[in-house]
Image (tube, rainbow, N blue to C red):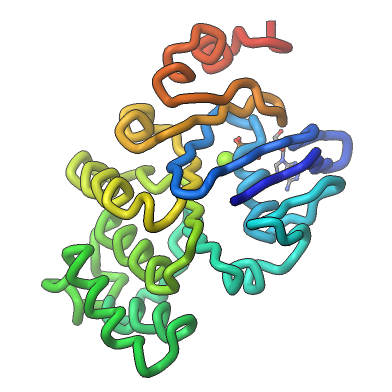
Length: 237
Ligand code: ADP
Ligand code: MG
């Protein structure tokens, strides 16, 4: 579904990505991990159209989307949730989700879609509240709802569990498991327990390259992967 070929991003003398060949299959929850500076955010930004790669290609279901602007990528069925919230604090929860639905489903279907999502994400009690008055965990939920409103085939999440309490993390994990199959997910995340609870497969980035990928349990129990988190990995020794 999502495919990259020899993706290179160079910032001055630094290769943030040094030739990444990545595949995500339809219906899977695919997590991206790796130590600080590994290139995860850069990869995320190339796929979401925020960075144009120095070299290489990104394709979505066979269509070349390399270097296309984010708005166009979203229209092709990719939902993007950045790490920092992209919400308007003064807008109500209801209106925020309605807007997300309106943009893609149109006026006739927007209200119904918004109502469904408010219900599905347990936001009924705060539907009339201003987004800025909510806790971080609930805001994250509102943001996911506004991404889901567009019914994207592929959803990209940058650190969805970061800064959240245990109950909110558990809610997010359950939600992803419930939605999987209907949507595919690419998730950049640090929280290993969260990754264990949602991921089908895991790709480990290290120094701008794919270090290892495979089934979640195999990758997370790999000694070489543990070593790179401790700074003992290949090239760091
Ligand atoms: P991660 O998200 O895995 O922590 P990043 O993708 O943010 O890693 O960074 C990968 C490498 O690229 C790092 O060495 C980082 O310092 C460098 N880098 C990232 N963004 C920029 C930028 N805008 N300008 C210069 N160097 C950058
Ligand atoms: Mg990062």
